[in-house]
Image (cartoon, rainbow, N blue to C red; front, side, top):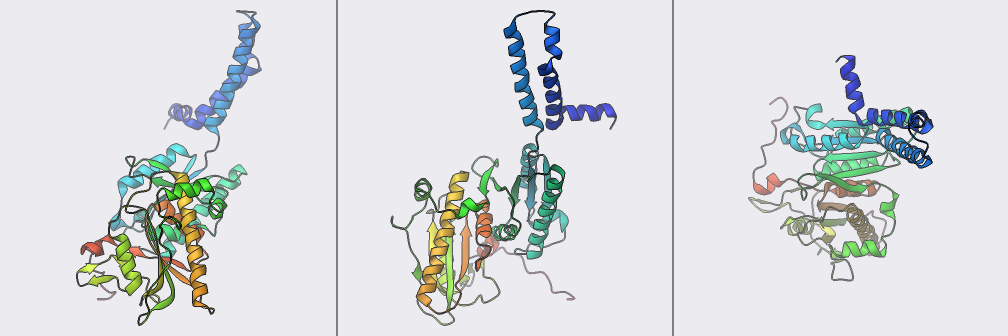
Length: 378
């Protein structure tokens, strides 16, 4: 590109245009234009208006060229489940809102990978890339950059990413949301910060109670599962439905109460229990439900619901530990269906807890799951 094209591109950019506007407006404010105006008029109010207008333009130029933080677009879908149009929407939203954009696309980095979830090495790699980019921006500007995450992933991978990011605390870390209610527009989701651990205020509890059945208004409490062979008494199932999925609660309750992921041949729930100690019913379960309705796209509501779920989990864990007695640590299985930013935030909040999100594969429930890959060397 010739220098004329480079200059044109700079002047048309947000940062370049802001810099030129600041320089020109500063010259006006410092007297270049006032000296010219003296040749035309001697009215003081004209000079005052020009001066004030120039100062306003300096501020506008600063707003245009100031650093606008880092946008991190993370797609954790493998190549066989790629979602190119959604990734493109997230890239566009990040580049229009931030000074720098980091794109981490699993389908591009590992193009031959089959569909798998829960890869801790992939999540760790993504977190390391984010941390390295933040460090570079911090060194360049001398200030803590604002970071926004534009995540596209299975709920389990999003949960693991939030858990991993809890190890790298940033000054500002916001998880954006690709809305399905507003034509795939990108809206604020949940901010990851200490405020999520603060007790809910009356207004926030009022927000939550309009969408969830809370204790004291008919909401279910901790339900004990009858004793059975192979029961994992120390395990509590936390069942959370925050989006439309008609059979989700019944299916999760069946898995928690029986330890079986299918009702019978050809009727799979879609859930895949973790391999370690998966067998046997849970000791108890807790249901948090929107009654098969979607949560509206409201970042304040998302934050309040996240904190509410975390509070209920902490209370249920403590209650069950007291019922069991002894020194056995209470573990949790999270059956979750809802907005991805809340799953990421729950992973961030429970990074030190024994809580595992149970992956749900819709293809298993529909009987369309692909055959497993052949063993190596076969």
